[in-house]
Structures are given as C-alpha cells and as structure tokens.
Image (tube, rainbow, N blue to C red):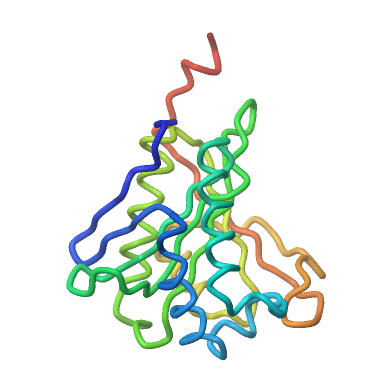
Amino acid sequence: MPTTQPSLSTARLHLLPAESAWARAMLDYQVRNREHFAPWDPIPGGMFYTELFWAMRMRQREMDWKDSRGAFFLVMPEKEAGRVIGTVSLSNINRGVFQGCHLGYNIDHAHQGQGLMREAVEAVIAFAFGTLRLHRVQANYQPENERSAGLLKRLGFQIEGHARDYLFLNGAWRDHVLTSLINRNYDLSPLQA
C-alpha cells in the first residue's frame, strides 16, 4: 500500500482521505443528515455531534490507513470544495489467503438519485482492485434499504446470503443481505511465490 492515502477524482467528485482538518465538515455533514442516517446507523453517543468527536474519528481513520486496515474517503462535489456530501470506506482489509475488505458508503439526502454514490463507489472499487490489489470487496445492507440493494446490483455485487441479527443498529439487531464483488483480473503471482 502507498505510504500516504491518495485522493481520487471522478467526473463530478473529489474523494479525499480522512484528516483531522475535515472534522468540522464531517460534523456539518452528520448534522445535516441526522434523520436520514438514523435507520441505518447505531444510536449516536453523547459526543457524536461534536467537532472533537470527528477530529478523533478522522485521526482513527488516518491510523487505519497507516496500519493497512482501511481507507476512508470524504466525497465532495467538484464545484463545492470543502463540503462533504458522502463517504466511502474500505474497512477490515485482510491480506493472507483472503485479500479482501468490507465496503461502506453513505450520501447526503439532498444528493440522492443523481448517480453520485455510484460514481464515488466505482472509483473506490477501482482503487481497491488496482492500487490495493484486493481480490474481494464485500458489502452488506439491510433488506429494507432498497437504494443500497439497487446500487450494489448495478455495480455487479452478487448476493451470497442473509445474516440474521447481524448488526445492532438504531436500537435493535438488524438482518443484513451479504454481497460481494470479485476482482476477475486478480494477479495470483504474489500468493504463489
């Protein structure tokens, strides 16, 4: 993995790595989308809606990159530099015989339905399969989340199963649909050396 997490760009977006300097922009993003994210997220703790919390969270995401455990991107429109409208993350990066990770993403309620999340996630998947040389990206969603189901299907993710009571979100255990996307151009040579 590169020493410093790179930025990514698409036709309409900039995807920037986590830095504590983005704490205020992340706080603003979370406050704007409090109701929108509530069904899909854990109930936030007392410090969640503070700049201090987001400074610490961004530092943790920076450490995840340095420790080769994850990559976190803040999604910003090309024409609104500094305004976070989404996030995309690769977490639980696991090497060895697995060579995979989990994908997470969210988008501002005001920017849904414009193809921006697909654009951002496609860029991060290309990064995962290209730069990070991963074989598998997994993404899970709650069965009621039709937008996530549609996005993952359009991106080529295949359903692999259903997990009952998978994550404790919004005050209850929630079932999830388990999906994955396989890198069909994966270079096996490092595993065979």
